[in-house]
Image 1 (tube, rainbow, N blue to C red):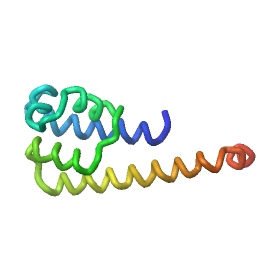
Image 2: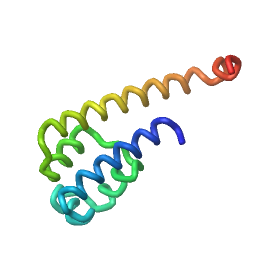
Image 3: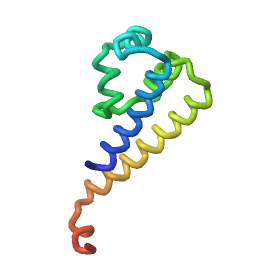
Image 4: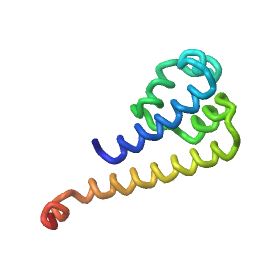
Amino acid sequence: MIPAAEARAQFGSRLRQLREDSGLSGRDFAARVGWAASKVSRLEHGKQTATPHDVVAWTEAARVPIQVQDELLAELRQMRLEYAAWRRQLRRGTAARQRRA
């Protein structure tokens, strides 16, 4: 699994845990946020990268402390930075990395 996909999956697991801790099913949670249930599923399974707006809406719907929201936003920011670095590396190609190996 590529690092970005792995990071999204881990982030999604954290979101799922918050939803489960709130005692809501995926459908009930989606209704509370005003999203389709498929979006909740995609975020929880790491198939879609959350936006900062998504994280704020999620934490408000799960009714978690603001500190948790801040932690998740910082984690999302870091994940996006790492993804951007990975994309830059791919753009340059892998020949140099293969030669080093």
